[in-house]
Length: 210
Image (cartoon, rainbow, N blue to C red; front, side):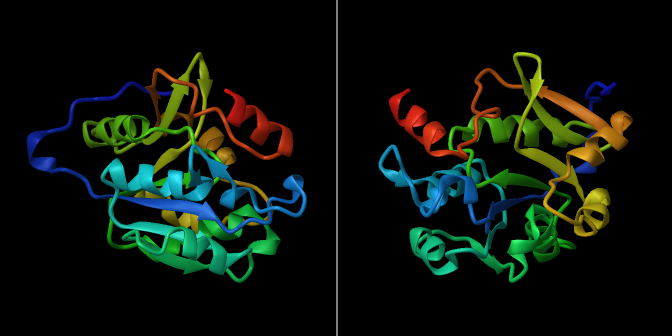
């Protein structure tokens, strides 16, 4: 059961929150094309995600690259981001989470981990997470919720970074949320962008038709 957000004492200060964008995967379910470079509303998918992180005020924003690293870098080359190369991206999603967290560890109070294939997450969604985090005494794991469903991205407090760096295999960090129910703060957001990813050609086509 998630716990409610508590009011933050005024002397606790505004927390520093970084962004980690996961953009290293092979997108194997898409076939030969790298979905992160697919055009969504006139921009490469990954650029939409990174621009959202920047617009939400996350600082720094680290982009984890691996597969097609140079092409992904070129799609973002004029943006103020920190590139992190994950040479072990073929071993699964956990390696990108670990690399991204390692890159910002020690300089922030929390990090929003954004998936490069979720271009419909808005800056307002991310700001809702950071606002909840700022006003929470316990600095909870902040998870967006819409229509009764938990989505992404998730804001992780610095105390969880060691566990995130220790992840293994082709999995994300959802099991950490399940293991820490008393540390979770559910943040309601109005739209379903936090539930929508693009991982197949059919999903890409549907996203362009919607």
